[in-house]
Length: 195
Length: 167
Image 1 (cartoon, each protein chain N blue to C red):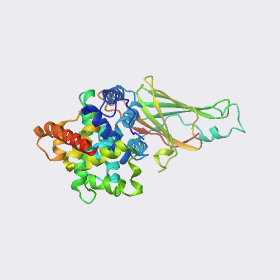
Image 2: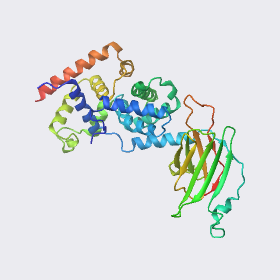
Image 3: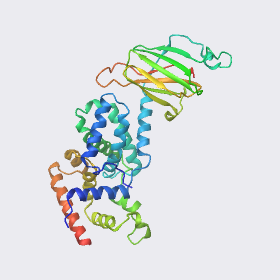
Image 4: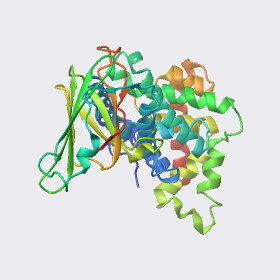
């Protein structure tokens, strides 16, 4: 089941617009709009935080704390159109703080691999249903870990703030764009080779 | 066949949604945390301005005509709250409230004490300061009021809690 409802996917303008609109309504006194914003953005924050390498339990805490942070410091969001970026950056910052506490972080690719994808020959590998998903997963897992993380982030985060992504992946900000390009190219090569 | 970046990223997003799905209670957990956070705020205690024999509200058998509606008035440092509890035709207790002066509020109705936040009912006071619980929980309750207009308008209005009263 896809966890996002936006017709164009998580990075589509539909999701971005819905989040911006919900935030704007909330800030002008429509209190239930905050619930809408939580529903729209929590799945995005989930994948953004999981890409940092936190385990599932810690990620759930981080997502919840991110919402508390928003409520406490909503005044610092100057522009409603920056809300998705603000939330993702706050979530990454909180994830970084939690991971510095140690003990709760594992490399996400191993985590996912262990939990969800036993050996390819195992019958349980039907978690990835369908040939195309399986091929995509195999192609992705042949990419460097950094590529996997970056692609997961840019696949899920609407209009990401590259400086925040760069911090989280410990990469120079200027290299995010080119790395994104290279990772997608590598993925295409892997997909081509797999067919 | 060439796949666009957008199509490829969409497929990656779907793949991760499948292999690492968000927990079913992620959203509800976040909303519950926000509700609890609201109630962890320091509340100023209202005082009951208009003393009402709260037993009257429960003595429906003895005084059905006069006890059906109970009016209470609470006052804090920044505003007053009027509460009216009445019976509806179908035997449900209804609670109407007015905040004076009118302020947008989030209002919780729940048992006193440390009951879990999700046992509380919640409502919003509109721009006229009116709020309602069409089917209020019965028994000993109190109201928590959280000013919502704080965003740039009236950050000084403190949150309030009423003393316990009977519905």
